[in-house]
Image (cartoon, rainbow, N blue to C red; front, side, top):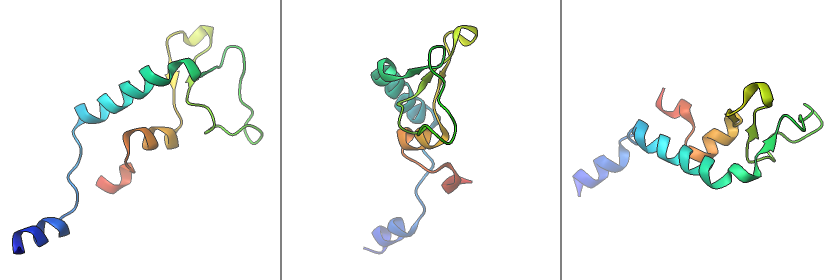
Length: 85
């Protein structure tokens, strides 16, 4: 029992880079169709809720780029990065 209590008190281990990458790639793959195209519609800061979109697709100059807000990345990978700093 003492060993289990010790494990419960220890901080969570840092997730592997591969695990975080897999979560992020899965999210991008599964939600890409609902991303907002920045070439046709740019959100207005203070007017539009930037977190409402699943993500953003770059304009013509940024072809192939996908963007997520910081909050969205934290929600997708399931962690607050400051926890392991």
